Amino acid sequence: MINKPMIHFNNVYKNYEQVAAVQGINIKVNSGELFGLIGPDGAGKTTLIRILTTLLLADKGSVSFAEKDVVEDYKYVRNNVGYMPGTFSLYQDLTVEENLNFFASSFGTTIKANYHLIEPIYVQLAPFKNRKAGALSGGMKQKLALCCALIHKPQVLVLDEPTTGVDAVSRKEFWAMLKELQAGGLTIFVSTPYMDEAEMCDRVALIQEGAIMDTDTPAAITAKFGQTLLALQGKYKQSTIDLLRTMSHVKNAFPFGDSIHITLTESGAKNELKKQLEAQGVDASSLKEIDPIIEDCFMDLMTTV
Image (cartoon, rainbow, N blue to C red; front, side, top):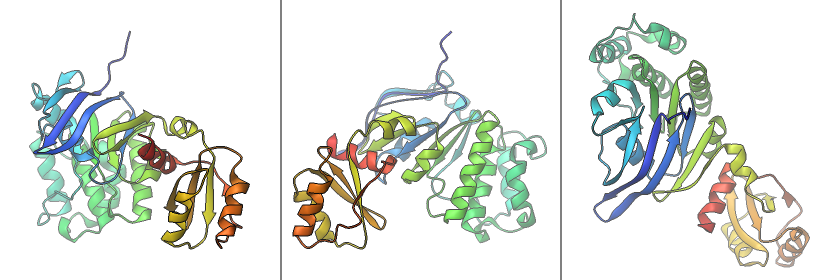
């Protein structure tokens, strides 16, 4: 018996006037999977999520949710998806408890009936249950929005850049909560611009300019890199990156935190590159070979496609 995907984007297109937002998107998300849609702002992530959650119509193609068409069976989708948009969309003048009660009653349920679904998260909010949502910290707003998305016991949790603008500690806590929810059997479809969050997903789709560049497990994507990658650590100016991009054996060079990541066109060219840099007065003593991460793969795919 072949298992049907919980979510299936089938050749989906969407344009905004002359702008092609998404182009021929094909994604399958399996039941119980934590699937990440990874890409920068403007890549098409929010457009896909709005089409999935019945807030937007595709120009071409189809999307199914639990084997139901999201257009024809939009009421079913809305009743069985827990949606957390990218911007905080709860009622800021209502308290934590009032917001949660409102969302529960909107789906014909109560906090008491489904409290077990949100208990690990809500216990952190309980001391602030009488505080207005607008007065919460970013991390607490995030937890409240997650509780409201879960209170009606959805089949799938859909989150659009849930950790954008949130501090590093809250980001880590949030992903730990998602892993716990997945362990309980929930299917999760999440978008993020943070490449490091890809490592928390079972599978990811890398999206840029409305097109999918690759879909696979994070480990499989990095294994496909298949090129020599170097790191040049230190505070280098843009001129050093520009110089590297003109050199033989260099496929591309990009800034990564406190270093420059350099992809070579052929293996064994590290020593030659080091000589070329030093001949131009660049300190290359820190140059070393490293293993690629998802962000390296993303940048390489951008320059290859």
